[in-house]
Length: 514
Ligand code: SF4
Image (cartoon, rainbow, N blue to C red; front, top):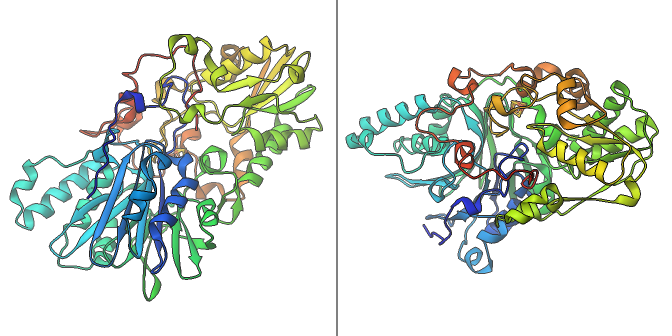
């Protein structure tokens, strides 16, 4: 397994832990296409999914005899180059762009994970977060003890990620095909998972029974593609076929795709994918993310009108909802803030002088547009409130006479255990403060959120088919109490605890928002 020489330290963490918005939890990609440059296709697929994870990237390739994995810390474009991609030759590939919600942010936890067995090997990539890691660790120990690896129980796992446990479980059935082992193992896995995995000859995709995270199947002229989002299908020239169904295992080999079920589907798709996580040019189950965000903005204008001169977004994530708000209200739309798209992608810590410039490292106001105007500023969500507080201050300094903040999601009051690292409950500004208290804290003239029912209606899905837990606390799975206290379980370390060791960046908020 080739290994690059990259290493992770806090220099590689986002530049401002305090101002961070919701962090995505990985993008996955898989391709079965003999005769094609599968590693290059996977590279471009991961490039399209970079917004879902920027800590590490990896690709595994099989040539039918062996699996080769290359992974390292950093962005897709930092990890891969022509030379290492050229060494990854084969017919099947999977890839992963990672943001860690369980497991330390270290090379060992970068994905795809890899295991060799007596009869072959497995590589696996995961988007989501599992909620029964303790149970899975016990299953791994039992399986290894039963197969004669008695010392296994006393040996630490190579990595600390939930994904590694599943890979170990899949590898603990050498007497069965990987397909049959997966149907059995996946029954025991709880939480959110969109997996792509492979042995030497077959590509697999699986989605948890709730279908929390997206996963789509696409068709190439001479092969098949699996991707977290349809934007990644577009970029490699694949046509969309369908979603991987909740509770479905799909296997793809020379006979084409074949489907089996490991769990009864209970769809609870993540509503926050529509709000913020997915790319606007992706479709989720056939529904345009951009169109949904515009519809939420229209709903927001109906629910929370404002007397104002201009509607503007906090770029880029507030843009579609701001367009919808402007269309519905008849108030002119204007871009009043210019975003430096690359600041959040740098791993260089800003100096103290630059930190004092705060949000200006990322956003700069167009004073001519703003001066003397009453503004409606639309953003997708408020997590800690640091970003919005800085934006309001910046707009006032640029000459705005009024700033009315409108948010295209309901208040985020609960943590997510399914792959999105919002914050601990105590850090969420809407947990404990009323809307009026939050308005006061932001320094805005008015503040309003779209209602949960309004958001649900814009998605076009029945409320019962959506996870809304970060808004209403109704989790689709059992969540251990320790989680509700904002802690991760057992030996698994959250990246949140890592970044909490980084000195506060003070006013330099919102630098790392993807
Ligand atoms: Fe999505 Fe929120 Fe549910 Fe997490 S808790 S899966 S972010 S809706």
